[in-house]
Length: 249
Image: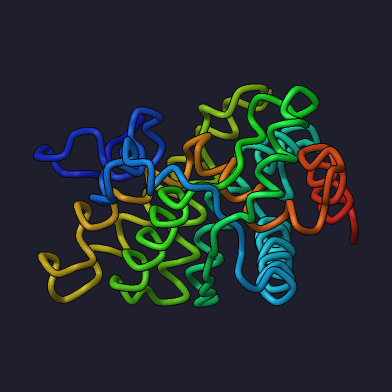
């Protein structure tokens, strides 16, 4: 596939964004081996924060639906992309909407309940920790420091959304073209700035890789949507809601 990035960075920004080996470690958060960082937390104001987060999720789905290129894909491929990419797009949505949140320690009674119910929970239902909340806050602060424009947010979301590495895609040739187009749009947007060495460079955007980690997905679902779902199957609930929104005209 044609390269749109300099030889000094042969893999390009999109590779860095989608590199599964990258994680939140870029952000210099406190050592997670500390007992303090492993402390379980929950939202301080779940009613308000969860309502705002749910609104961001709806906007995220609507963003994907609004892309003509996305609508040209087969329904199966659209569902695959939504399932694989909604978390990083949601995180960018939190940043774009300037959503802030505060956490507090989980009461001891709730911790005991979680221990007793541990056998009934899925292995990826990991309660949020103080370290995880710190990582997410650091991520948002990094995005805000870039002072991205609406167009920059859109191009970055497109570059993340249209990637061939999502398992289960059938239209590989079509996806290859969309990925190339998204890379080109993002690259040209960055080059259009009068000062290419400023904070809008490739290096300053590498932290986006963290948004694709399974740790981020568990953190997002448990922190922002568990208060709404209670003990229901959270992943099934989110999947059904996302699919319903996607299929709505």
